Length: 308
View (cartoon, rainbow, N blue to C red):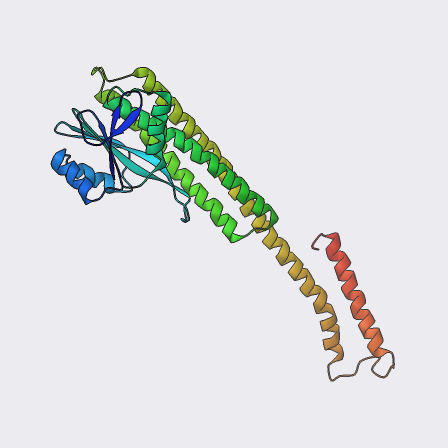
């Protein structure tokens, strides 16, 4: 699905393409591909590159075309990993500005709404790229807050009862933080490359670049903090699980030894040989009492060394 957006005081949707308008394409179909390749003459190699879900943030030129790939966060509802990152490509050439993403995202619609609310005028293609990167940093921070809530919830569940499901939940969050960290650092490196390409062109707004870099660094710092906390929590619960297993094994061993003593005495008196008390009417009671006494002594000893 494609949208034609023209910026005056914020982006407004128009019904056809005009020079210097922004063509936003999400979840492209065959009609969108034909428009990009036949009408706008976008290189097919760029379109193919963006289709790769693992495409790293970068810039690439082909003739007069410039492809900038940025990674943005995406929430997956009902999926094994709650948050991932996906590539979005911004393809420019003169008065042609195209963004292409193979997923439907909240970021684009939120960005358009934000420009209208703040009456932002985007002067050129570099500013659009930088503002999209800035918006990605904002969404990284937004999703990081949700990850922190999920982490706290999983931690509380683990405090009640250590279950594999809760540990797997935390492991998936940790994997998400790795994706976020890699993508944010890649986006930051892309800004440095764009700054070099557009240096001296009149497109470069150093204040905007600085704002975007600060936002990305804040997001990266938050990712690192949450990752360290999550790693520490996982290690702590791993130690708790190991300690619980050791405690259970000690108790089972102690219980087996206590039960072994009466069994041992009963085995001795069950042999087909002569023993004392065999003709005494109190033999059974004495043997049972002695067995219980030995078990009680063993129990007290184990309690003293805190095996129970």
